[in-house]
Amino acid sequence: MYTCLSEPQVAAYLERIGYCGEVSPSLSVLKKLVYCHSTSVPFENLDVYYCRKEPELTCAALYEKIVVRRRGGYCFELNGLFLKLLSALGFCAAPHIARIKKGDFLPPPSHEILIAELCGERYFVDVGFGGPAPSAPLKLIYDCEIECTSGRTYRFEKRGALVALQLKKGGIFSDMMLFSEAPCDEIDFLPLNAFCAYSPKEPFVHKPMAWLRTEKGKVSIDDNLLRIECEGKTAETPLDSSDKMTDALEKHFGITFAIK
Image (cartoon, rainbow, N blue to C red):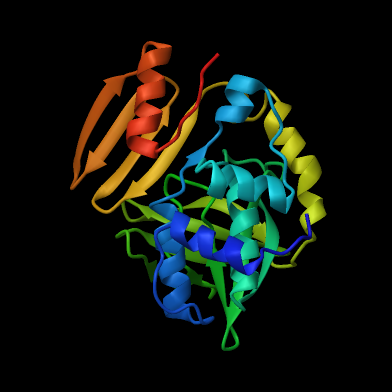
């Protein structure tokens, strides 16, 4: 898990996400990296759902899956490998454990986010959540409305030892997730990964999911429904056969996956 990316691997990773240009550790580069990643590498749980397989989190396995085979993954995979890329490019970043809010109770930890430091400021980074996740790094400041490039508005709220990331809907802020400000070790995600891959309390074992941001919206698969959102309009298509699912994954997500 602690292997670093080599220079050729970094170059291939940047090609995978369609990034070109300066690679110095700056906010402008970080913003572009996050955007390129979220429009190129899909969030998906295909191995967990169809193969009942726990994703391997070693650097070599993540690189082979995401860069070489051009697949996606869920948070521990996408943020895990993105952390390797940031580190290789000279960014100061660390992984943090998060809890996805699912009601009024405190949920168990089941998510990985990253916090990067630039010029004495901290930035929240998440390329492994999908859905309403911020499309750009968010400056980690409390109780201030933060407009994102996607048009969504977020806010960070201090909750004792945790921080709540909130999303504004209909003029009201609601919790999306809670995360610790204390960085963790990469190996800490191994039991969380196993929990998410096998527990019936997690959604990944119950239905196929895929999500990818596009220049004009997003495309997603939730269970057996393909949803394409473009410039405020939404089109839905049922995926009621393995062939339709396979075709949709390849056409809209660039994923070649044999459904058994």
